[in-house]
Amino acid sequence: MNKREALAVVGGLSNPSKMPGKSIGLPASECSVGGKLQKIAGSVCSNCYALKGQYGLPVVQKAQHKRLRALSDPRWISAMVTLIQGMEVFRWHDSGDIQSYGHLTNMMHVIRATPNTRHWIPTKEKALIKRWVKQGNTVPKNCVIRLSAPMIDMRIKHNGVSVPGIKFSAAHTTSPQGRACSAYKRGGECGDCRDCWDRRIDCISYPKH
Image 1 (tube, rainbow, N blue to C red):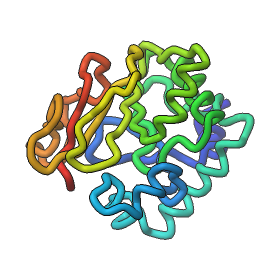
Image 2 (tube, rainbow, N blue to C red):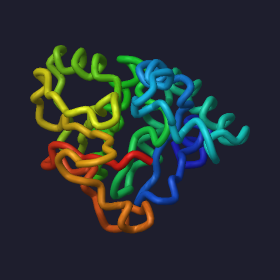
Image 3 (cartoon, rainbow, N blue to C red):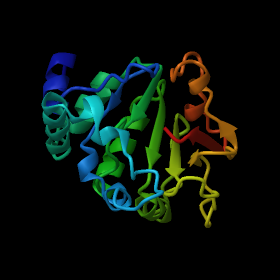
């Protein structure tokens, strides 16, 4: 499969301008846990950036829903591998989240097939991740999964999740937990920083924005 064919299968990748690599955006309106949090004041999703601004444009929404439908295409894994191969880093879901256990499993197939790319999976789907771990799965060494605290300024609790490659993230208004995201010192851009992809960093905290 060539890249043109892969793009047609997947529905294209997203290209967040402030990040060092590409991503794949799904509709934030289709988040499971995030969809519930969007209705709760003080949650990290109550003012979701992926439901406004450029993300709300019809052309963006159309592309995101096409990518959502593509998840059931049997060629999806092969297409994603074709598109990601050769990239330094890849962030999963600049909008949206893991849709199902099968989706997570397919993502891991892609990650293992692109060992020279560092993958970062931010997610609020803790139950899916715990189920996946209980099945005896391990996180590939080129990947970090960051479980997001659901509420702003909520202190991180490991709750029995102690698996190599599974880390955390939080949002803060006052004091950050763990490593504070430094992008906001550079106009919101990652620059040379790759902390979010670093399995050695237990928690990254982002200022509420």
